[in-house]
Length: 463
Image (tube, rainbow, N blue to C red):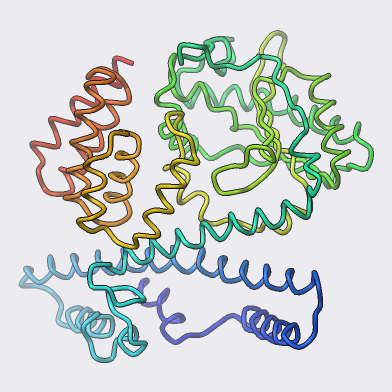
């Protein structure tokens, strides 16, 4: 019933009034630009039109995935109930009615009325509906990068922001041998390295008042900034913090991964000009210890977004300190860039320090151009010598494209390469043991999965 309630408005193609008005006005204004040259206004309308399309995709696609997940679970539930002789006949009737309405082979199914099938928009039988949705997401992900490139040429035409020098007092927290400076791990309320999220959040609570006081003094010290230009975010949710630690800092030595989470306390400053951004940079340099910083106008994030990022060590309670995140945005860029709903979706594939994001982007673009997982792509991959590249494709095949067998083949090749390069006890190898366990478990091979998962547990415990 919940699935029907959620899906019904979209099956009947109802739309919110504001959405209808937006589409109507955009269509009318874009039609006018075909007759008269409106200069920059035409570009603004085209960008807004693209943003509306991307935002619709970002909301409706995850919703569809959720509904389809519920549908699969309902069918499994129905199968289980059919074995129950006491199953209520009215319950059977409701379930059969629902399945007949949503059966992909039904003549009345909406997708067949639209002339589409599981082969995606081009009807390619080798591309499933799930794979086509992933490729559509990937297309819009690259669209956002194009939008970012267009906007930065307007916001920073002379490259002054991109050329701004930002410098950390730590001189970098990574050592030459690839390990990290132990002294820059987050500390608990006793001044010891945090051991788990409970330690981390206790320290964050204690440091929060000092962080808020410092950020207010920052905006009060920069001409033209006010409290309205400061956004102090709520603490990062524990589930997301745990996920980020696992995805991005599992490989950091020394551990634990949770001790490298710097964005539990975070704030954003919205600047209106290069001058304000420069003054914020100067204030931070003179008034707090900068642990790490990055000018992401010079080196953009993987999704194309630009800002300047600082991790600062905020003193509290005598000699204790907590590392907090400060993002400095340019108002015009942030406003026109919009909300990239695809960033969090692709973030896990850019986590970890082992591969340049540009290389991952090139591989994702290659997958988009190929448009399907076929024998030619597999032949190319099995001959590849970059274990990180193979691991990227193996993860996507398993997590997004439902290509379990091909994923298993790639993960096994990755494991051979990593055991040779890093050894069986390295955390990188341990993560591949874990992936192999998950893949085998999804195939129903519980015994094989257990062997790999035990290996992974041993590796992570040792590290």
